[in-house]
Length: 111
Length: 114
Image 1 (cartoon, each protein chain N blue to C red):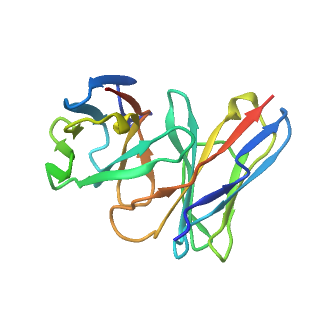
Image 2 (spheres, each protein chain N blue to C red):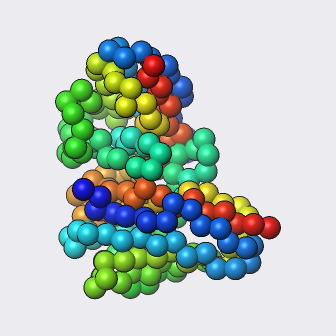
């Protein structure tokens, strides 16, 4: 039972343009949503999070949007840079220290 | 501050054997979580320990077990290895308190079962 779904295995974007990574979830009890970035041969690193009581959180070039009615969130990267090429994982937790991850989306930013 | 370390980084075993993986969390962190990463499946939650107690468990068979020591270091054990256990095993540490539970991951142990 995949409670967190990332339906796009990969995404290719031109440098300088916007990257939009999408995530859907099924469990309405999730309190927090997080995005992690993973480079090859490294563990994932935390990128940005959003509480379920908010609909937007921004940190520099990264913005996460949450649509609770649609059970959907998205990560926007503007402008995209070649160094952003990585696998991005969407994750969610209920505050109970059990974090559920999606399958990941591989982002390619072309120079 | 030193990051999360995992040993060994690579491991090759044969079916039926057992394996123990080790994780040292960031100093001061009391929570350690373990994940299995396979292609197309993302990170599958195995279990989480806090102050030597297992607080959460994922949907894995009993062949997968873990423990945490008083210094917060954690070990994960897999007995009677199967080919499907080949994966990257990631350990993550956090304070174990607070709502967001931002986790810090180690580089992982790549396990290959032949």
